[in-house]
Length: 361
Ligand SMILES: *Cc1c(COP(=O)(O)O)cnc(C)c1O
Image 1 (cartoon, rainbow, N blue to C red):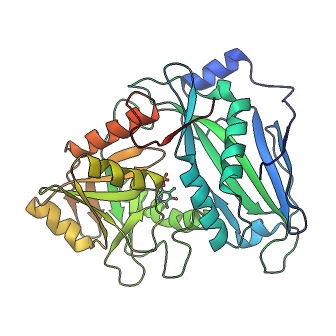
Image 2 (cartoon, helix red, strand yellow; image 1 turned 30 degrees about the vertical axis):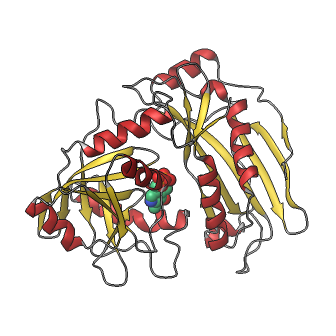
């Protein structure tokens, strides 16, 4: 099915001067493009009323189910401008497939892969002047945020019969200003992010809501991010609030946690393929917090890094926990090599031998 989307252009788009000011220093999540895309769903009509219109606040009935029962999912991806001016997406079908899996878990309607990709591309085409120019030292992009929520006005507890899907876009600056710097990670022993049979593998706001108090604990302990352990035994490393983890070993093995309750990042999946091509052996398995501590101490683990769409790859410099801390090998070269390979493919500076890139415009 090809979705029909009506476009009504904004009557008050940013002026060239305003746009230039925003794109000079966008930060993250501060500014939004001139337009937004909306599609609605009901059981009778399916997906309908697709439209692109001026970006503006939306009106919701106070009883809208999402505000009470958090039936909501989202995606995060980027549009990259290449040196020749063209604009590209990185593995958008993977985001589409993940959104469909999240839909299944949250009892939301599934958007077909082609429809997801088309809607995201449609918005980027309309707002293409908002895709910043990038350079090797300035990784600017247009961050894309598709999301879906229960918009039915009804307080009964059941899957909503009116659902809204939207796409908004926000120019994003270099995640690391003045070069990548290793992060300090706080190990929370009081909070977990996902249990067996829960929503850990779905990209849903609820997982983020439950991570905020642990993230605040991390900040209070002088750390940048929090790492969660499995809920069952409190032994195995899961992930950070919004990034997956990798452990590089001296013998050339790279381990990434696999527990059934983590959110499997597209960056994580891409690194598994890239690292294999670079000659590393990648193991997806349970990885104990004791193995982390002992491995760093013995020198068997030479690097720890986190990955996700926003920061791509970030070295972990230190692990801090109740009663101590260990330096965490953030100074190696493997993360740098992998990061450069990925970013070079995304920005069109290296050949896309995996067939990951899709041209938008
Ligand atoms: C989005 C997300 C990631 C990273 O996924 P990418 O597709 O690589 O951006 C990791 N963990 C959580 C909890 C997430 O929500």
